[in-house]
Amino acid sequence: MRRFALFAPLLAFALIGAVFAIGLTRDPARIPSALIDRPLPDFALPPIEGRTEGLSSEDLKGEVSLLNVFGSWCASCLIEHPTLMEIARSGDVAVYGLNWKDRPGDGAAWLARHGDPYARIGDDPRGHVVVALGVTGAPETFVIDKEGRVRYKHVGPITPEVWRRTLAPLIEELKRT
Amino acid sequence: MIRIRPILAAAALVLAAPAAGVEPDEILDDPALESRARALEETLRCVVCQSQSLAESNAPLAKDMRLILRERLVAGDTDEEVVAYLVDRYGEYVLLKPRVKPATLALWAAPFLALLAGAAAAFLYVRRRKPAPPAPLKPEEEEAVRALLEGRE
Image (cartoon, rainbow over all chains, first blue to last red):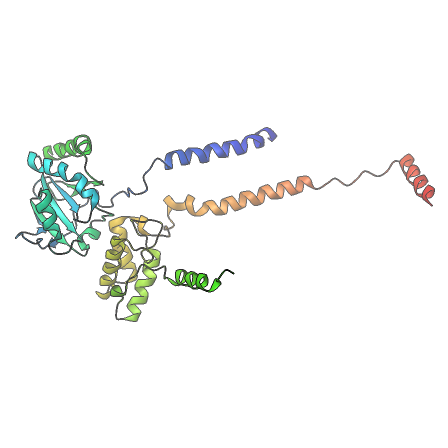
């Protein structure tokens, strides 16, 4: 009994150490999406300046698609932009955009300068749809299946690596089912 | 001489700056609704800054969320409905005070268990430390003490 008491602090330390060792490897910015495997919330957004078509949740049914949240103010969006352009050019998956918190014209000007990968874009200046989707920042990208359900959310810029390792295989799988 | 007035004035300004991220254009005309909105904001987490509430944060997303929260109140939602709307989308993580349920039981119980364990340890320690009453003196010791005391006089 006495011997056990002697080692109890060491044991407690090991236990707490193990909990922290696991806990600290997690990125607190990645909040798991509450929407995974649930249908997209219904929405219908107007187009951004210079476009005639907006974006509604109906547009995201029927085929596997990516829904990308972006804004001209968002620095990381510029980092992922070449990758998004490449994805759109490959035609592997339809890419839709959600222009978040831009003043009228800013989103369109940004796309005119850097290229426009989006099949359709919804304008969400006050973040209604962004909050309905549980977005925590830009860029964020949702993978939507044929039935219009959210299957995956990527937080942060899509790098070629993220595309190759995570998104592309998932999209291939969703296309087959 | 150090001039204390300007320092005090600066300190007062810093302290007076409201912790609230709520901006004037967000405030509702109806004071009853506004006070409900303020109370709700205090209990909800800003998902960008995470350790701040919606009320404190000046992140753009927090502003969006404050406005949406107010829109829902104006539309007639109860406080519970507004909270449910956000929990449904962001998970229970948006609640600054986690709900008591099986998954959070350890979280809620831990401080009380730690207190109990500490109290038990302290109790055992104190009891063990209590010195045993001294053994009665043997006759020869008693004799020696008496001799000493008498010798002193």
